[in-house]
Image (tube, chains in turn blue, yellow):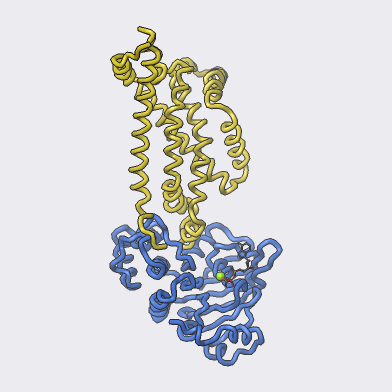
Amino acid sequence: MIKLTQIRKSFGRNEVLKGIDLTVEKGEVVAILGPSGSGKTTLLRCINYLEKPNEGRIVIDDFSVQCRRPDKKAIHTLRQKTAMVFQQYNLFKHKTALENVMEGLFVVKKISKDEARIRSIELLEKVGLGNKLDSYPSELSGGQQQRVGIARALALNPEVILFDEPTSALDPELVGEVLAVIRKIAKEGITMIIVTHEMGFAQDVASHVVFMDEGVIVEQGKPNELFTSPKEERTKQFLKRITPEAAYSI
Amino acid sequence: MKLDFGFIWTAFIALLPAVPTALAITAVSVFCGLIIGTAVAVIRLYKVPVLYPIASAYVTVIRGTPMLTHLFIIYFGLPMLIDGATDSLGLSFRSVSIPMIGFAYISFSITAGAYMSEVVRSGLLAVNRGQIEAAYSIGMTTFQAMRRIILPQAFAASLPNLSNMVIGMLHGSTLAFTVSVVEINAKAQIVATTNWKFFEAYLAAALLFWGLTFLIERLTALAERRFNLYNRGGVS
Ligand SMILES: Nc1ncnc2c1ncn2[C@@H]1O[C@H](COP(=O)(O)OP(=O)(O)OP(=O)(O)O)[C@@H](O)[C@H]1O
Ligand SMILES: [Mg+2]
C-alpha cells in the first residue's frame, strides 16, 4: 500500500502541489487525469524523489519518509521501491536494450551478471523485444524504446511503477503497442500510477481514477463513476473538453 | 641559400630520441589534467559548497596566465616550498633531486587541468538531464550514476575537444626546453649547433610534430568511432 499525506511542493513562490492525499492499494492501477500544468508530473516525481517535496509524508507498506527532513538513505530506499517510466523514455543512450534493463539489477540490486542477463532477456521478451536485445536506443522506434523503459522499470521489482504520459511522445500508430504492454502487466497485479491523456485506456485499465487541477485532487473514484457521473463542476468541464471519440484512439 | 635535404633527414633521425620525452610530457599532463579537470568540472557544475569558489578561482587564474609562466613559477617556487617544508620537518629530501622533467609534469598538469575542466564541462552539459534522472529512478547513487551513465557519455561527447587538448599539450611540451628538458625543439637546436643549419633542423622538427599530430588525429577518429557506436542509428 502506498500512502501520500499532505504532499506540498513549490517552485519559488509558485505552489504546484497544495497538499495531496492519496492512498493506493496493492495491485491497484490508478490513473491521474487533469489539465496541463495541474501538477501531475510533479506529483509523480515527488513519489520517486526526483523532486523534493517541501512537506508531507510518503509511506510504502511499513517504510515511511518524512519529506521535510529526509535522510539520504531513506531517499535511496524510496527510489528502489519505486520505478519511473518517462514521457521521453530516458533510456541510457550508451547502453543496449539488454544493458539498459540489466543495469539496475546488476548495479543496484547486486545480482550476478549472468542472472541479471537471464532475467532481463525474459523481461524484454515479455514486452515483445526479444529480437532487439543488442540494439541501442538510437536504433529503436519510440514505441520500442518505451517498452524497454517499461522492462527496465519492471526489472527492479518495485512496489509501484509510475508512468508519466508514457505514450504522449509517440506517433499514434505506436501508442497501441505500448498500451498493450501496460495492460498486460496491469493484469499481473503490479501496482501502477499512470498519468495519461488516453481516456479510453484509463477507463478500462484503471481501477481508480484521480482528477487533479491546480495542485489539488478535485475528485477521485471508480472509473465508470467518475467518467459517467462526475460530481464536481471542474471535472465535468474537463471531461467535456476531451471528447470520447478522440480519446478512444487505440 | 640552398636547402640541405640530406641534413633534414639526418636531423629528423637525430630528433627521434626526443620523441619519448615529448610524448611523456603530453601523456602525463593530459592524464593528470583530465583527472583534475573532471573533478573541477563536477565541482563547478554541481556547485559543491566550499570547493566551488576554489575551483572557479583555479580555472580563471590558470587560464588567465600563460603556460610558460606556470612553468617558471613552479620551477622557481616549488623548490623553495619543498626545501622549506623538509627543513622544518627535519627530512633529508632536497628539491635538487627532482628531475627537471618533473617540473614540466607538475606545471603542465596544472595548466591542462584548467583547460580540461572546460572540455569536461561541455561534455557533461551535452548529457541530457533525463539520463541522471533515469539513473536515480532505478535507485543508483550519485556516484554510480556519474561513473556508469554520465561520465561515459560526457567522455564520448568531449572527444573532439579532447583531441584538441592533446595536440595543444604536445606542442606546448616544447616549452619544457626553458627548464633544460631536451624535448624535440631543444634537440633540434642541439643537432643544428654542429653545422649551423638551424633552418633544416627546425624543419625536421616541424615534420616530426606534424607526423605526431596526424597520429593523434587518426587515433581520435578511431576512438570516436568506438565510443560513439551508440549514436549510429538515427531514429529518435
Ligand atoms: N522545475 C520546475 N521549475 C519551476 N516550475 C516548474 C518546474 N516543474 C514544473 N513547474 C511548474 O509546475 C506546474 C505543474 O507542472 P507539471 O509538469 O507537474 O504539470 P502537469 O500536470 O504534468 O502538466 P502536463 O499535462 O502539461 O504534463 C507548472 O506550472 C510548471 O510550470
Ligand atoms: Mg506532465
